[in-house]
Amino acid sequence: MCEKKGVLVAIEGIDGTGKTTLAEKLKSWLESRGFKAAIVKEPGNSIWGRKIRESYSENMDAMEELELFLKDRAVDVKENILPKLCEGYVVLMDRYYYSNMAYQGARGIDMHEIRGINENIAPEPDMVILLDCDPELCLRRIENRGKRNRFESLKYLKKVRQNFLDIAREDEKVKVVDASRSEEEVFEEAKKLLNHLLRKSKE
Ligand code: TYD
Image 1 (spheres, rainbow, N blue to C red):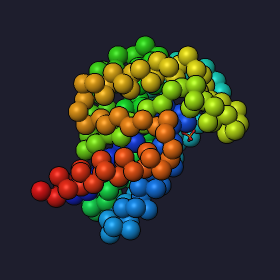
Image 2: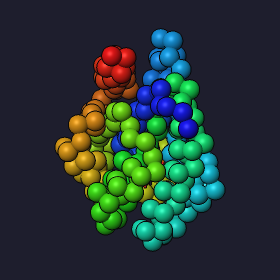
Image 3: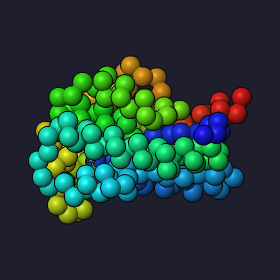
Image 4: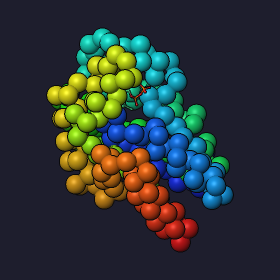
């Protein structure tokens, strides 16, 4: 594998915070400024990622669920993330292993352990944009998406949000952005954060 030349940014947050919209806006903005940019979405398209999606309405053992996300991520790293970073892309992750820590952590698995396993198989991000929003507001936003998946219950998302905020407190790479505001305001703040990071990575 080549040396990492690109920049890796993870966009994280509970369901309904606007990760996908923000990733798309940032990608266009980066391209308009002459950067090569790519979005990589997790869960991905590996057989494991597809298995995760097929299981959205079932109950699944927490360890089995963690395993599936890890296997899917390992494929994603090899096939998408590392090749793009080698080619000098700014890679925008629409969810990454911080979701693994927060969501599977909320099912009782130790978050530090989840981080450790992930950091053995996946490159650490240069920055994490954590879109933070009250779960009730987020669930209202995604109501029109149709049937909720098993991750999208209020009680569960409250725990997941708290886990994300706990992670942010001890990890300076995580920048908390208030996602209860308008898409435009969130985009403006994310651009500032990214600008700062890109300037630093050129030094
Ligand atoms: P989501 O971003 O909603 O994907 P899609 O739009 O394809 O359904 O992700 C699906 C769910 O997966 C989401 O509710 C959070 C969960 N998830 C985890 O529990 N752990 C993880 O490591 C990742 C990446 C996602």
